[in-house]
Image (cartoon, rainbow, N blue to C red):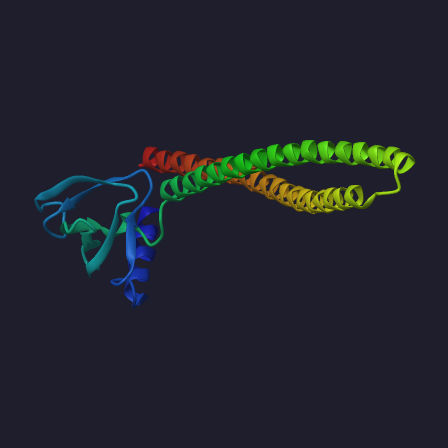
Length: 223
C-alpha cells in the first residue's frame, strides 16, 4: 500500500511544473526528521518537523524518495517526499475556521450592543413623544378654554403649531431608528445561523481528522 503511495507522490512531483514555487506542508499527525542529505544515513538536522509546517521544495531526488526543502524560518534539509502535501492540513483548516467563528461571535456581540443602544434610544424617544402628545392635549384644552374667554387665539395657535412640528420630527426619527433596529436584529440572526453552521463544519472536519488518524494507525499496525 505504501509503495503505491510513494509511487504516486513521486509521479506527481515529476509532472508538476510548479511544485518548486508552491508552499507545501508536512502531512497530518507526523513529526518528520529533517536530514542533511537524501537518505536515512545522513545526519538529522531537526528531530521532528510537526504536521502543518509550511515549506518550499528546492530539489526532488526521485531515486531516494527524498525532497530538499526550506522552511519559512530558513532551515534547509532533506525530508521524505511521502510526508509532503500541497494544501494546509486539517488541523490548520480547523484552526482557521475556529478563528473565523470567534470573529463572527465578536461581531455578533458588537451588533447586539448596537441593537441595545438603539432600543434605549427608541424608548427615550417614545417617552419624549408621549410627553409632547400630553403637552399638545394640554395646549388644546387651554385653547378651547381661552376661546371661551377671549377671541384672541394667535399666540396659542403659534404654540400649537410649534408643538405639532416637533411631534412630526420625533415621529420620523422614531420610524428611522425602528427600521435600523430591525435591520440589525435580522443581520445578527443571520450571523448566528452562520456561526451554528460553522460549528457543524468544525465537527465534520474534526471527524474527518480523527478518522484519518485511525486509518494511519491501522496501516501502521498492518506493517
